[in-house]
Image 1 (cartoon, rainbow, N blue to C red):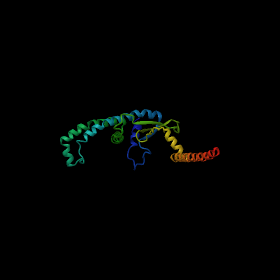
Image 2 (image 1 turned 180 degrees about the horizontal axis):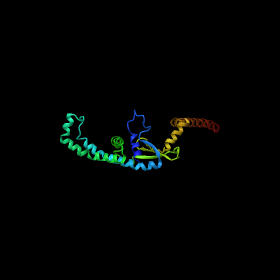
Image 3 (image 1 turned 90 degrees about the vertical axis):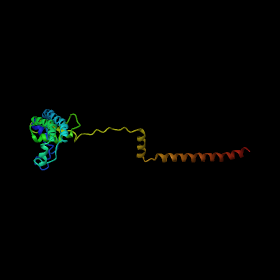
Length: 214
């Protein structure tokens, strides 16, 4: 379990010039039972590191940017600021020692506190997920799974919007190539022309009838 937990954390390292550079950061492939067993250990370590972020922020107010061993650093080491810094950083040191006892890898603990924990500062839990793979492992046909950190390759669920009936009618008219406004105007003009011609024909037809009666 320690090896799997540290392997997951070490994938987050900067391995640009490393021969064993991980293919995907924050992801390992193992069997389903092992992934289920190591997941609580990783979640616990991330929670411990996340709770220690407040102590590190409080200690940052009293630390110095001078190089270790310089005269400025020695003066800071003998001042009261160092006492305040040591008291503020104590919870962070205790948390690192606790995670080192759980994982057993100093580099993995450093990556956990420096890179992984700040990423989940606003998350209360659920830092990892398990995704089953359809293809079994060669040799023993063990069911494989992906154990990875969340927040990088998450699926975004988009809500579907139901279109209104007006939008559907406009889209159908546009698809048929009909201009609704132009069609209405044309119909109005034709009706007016037909009405005027009917009135003229009625007026012309009325004149012969009157002459015949006379």
